[in-house]
Length: 412
Image 1 (spheres, rainbow, N blue to C red):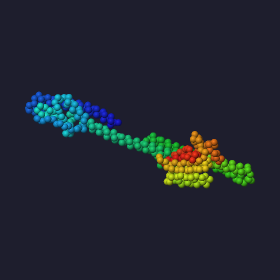
Image 2: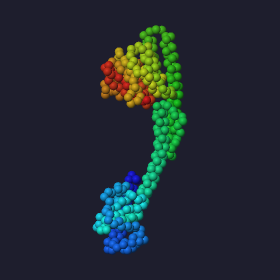
Image 3: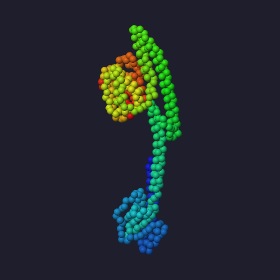
Image 4: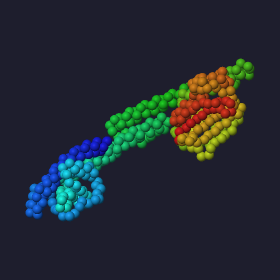
């Protein structure tokens, strides 16, 4: 924009200056022609030549019997040529011809007179300004230089913001960036320091919660174990069997509550082979009585917490097996990057308008799916929490088998 404005301004000024200079030179040439025609004798011509050289800086010579050239040589400085041509046309009644390209510092102007051609060699700066282009070049060079400096400065600041964004994204996925340090402008460093302080507060909160839950788990399991022991030592009866079933359900509920509250725990994110992980989960599900088939593309790698993700995927597979007879687990690479894992079943499914409701903690959707007596409605909530903690998402859809499809999308 600066170059365009500068060029527009100086182009207009340059044209104006060239017009004024050309008019002055054309007036001098018209005086030379008129003076010669008033007295074309040799002594008068000699006097005119000396006077023009001394007072006007013009070199004048008469070529008797000649005519004007017929061809014109193109000039790169067309605005100056146009101004000179207009000025000469306005001041001269005789035919004329000029060349602004033959000599670097002079103009060759020829006028047809009765005796032949009157040739005038005039300094170029008498008709055209020659310094404006240099100023424009300097202005352009300075603009390019300053633009380069600005780009380098902005890229340096943007790089600092990108590092901060990468650190925030890694922390949001449960990872850590120990080498991250504030860089860049004062405002960017201040934001980075605020992020580090926030990260430390959140980490302290997670550590405190994990320690508290470990203590609660121990405190709850101790009396539960005593009750189970007393039930095992009691005389067999229907009441004792009912007590054992209640204790087993209570233990399962406590496990699910603690798993939900514990969230992703302290496990680190690492690159994991999905085929191996899914096969391990499928083997465990089959030992638990599930019947399923696998469709996994080879060489699929994802960044995740293996143990936590196993539990989330196991929840989805066992949930599908509990409500359907046929379960298909598939994993494939996504076209835009990342991987997609689907768990399909041929059960009764869930109405589409209740997909999001199914992810609410402690929501069991009894009227849509057969009730799992041991479940407390945390399986899908835990699975989505784990997947979103890895930067992906878990959604539900209609399965080609007629039941429910759970779709896990993980970033690359």
